[in-house]
Amino acid sequence: MSDNIILSVKDLSVSYKEKNIIENINLDIEKGKVYSIIGPNGCGKTTLIRTMSRSIRPKSGCVELNNNDIFKLKTKNVAKKMAVLSQNNMTMSEISVKTLVQYGRFAHKEWWMGSSSEDNEIVEWAIEKTALVDYKDRKINTLSGGERQRAWIAMSIAQKPEILLLDEPTTYLDISHQLEILELISRLNKEEKITILMVLHDINHAARYSDELIVIKDKHVYTKGNPWKVLESNVLRDVFRVDAQISKDKETNKPIFYAKKVI
Ligand SMILES: Nc1ncnc2c1ncn2[C@@H]1O[C@H](COP(=O)(O)OP(=O)(O)OP(=O)(O)O)[C@@H](O)[C@H]1O
Ligand SMILES: [Mg+2]
View (cartoon, helix red, strand yellow):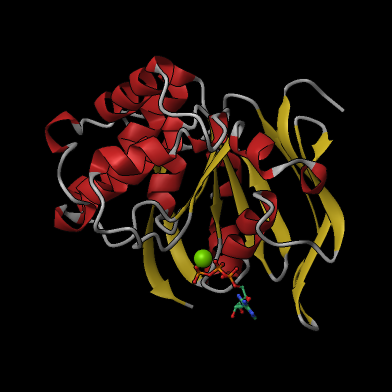
């Protein structure tokens, strides 16, 4: 038990019917840091993040949010601390950006209550933080992919969470919109002190924007740690089956890798 750990996974195993997807995973997520989970398609990243956000019950082991068993907490009490952006969030397309962001406040009030001035202030703050002021009356289905992703992030931060879980937040975005979303996530971490746990496929983005990487392979955590510790050529060979060359980005001092060929 430690005060600087916001989310902790202990001996976690998850299965769908008889098939084990995750076996005996242990993880501690420290407050204020940015973590990225990386690993090949189908290795269980979404399953892990969905279990950590209490959408899937584990076969064994536990998930603790601020030292409390997450499966014993009420949905609302989890939502006050944790916001989750899932891999496919294409629904609710007919509503406006502002209405979507207002949904983020639901965790903080009872169904019979209207919006308080504090709710309205937080909604405006979330819209400003995500640079959506000019878009707030637009319907979600009229936005570009990057704008839509910003709207979902605005809804998530309107929850005023301590931790934000994002499953592939940059999928389907072009490179400039990918960077825009990652810069936004990075700002939310630095300025609002929101702990970030995300799944990313782009290893260079994961290395650049994360304090810690968590590599999943064959149902287990293959390795974890800072990007320099994790991104060794043998890890890239064993986990992703590529022959990789690693160098240092002079601006960020982070590792960048270039995949030369599939092994
Ligand atoms: N509801 C389900 N029922 C049965 N099997 C499932 C279910 N959801 C996922 N799986 C299986 O569990 C494994 C892990 O899936 P998961 O979605 O967690 O992988 P992932 O690492 O997120 O993959 P990707 O990188 O493609 O998003 C896969 O083999 C998948 O087919
Ligand atoms: Mg996934």
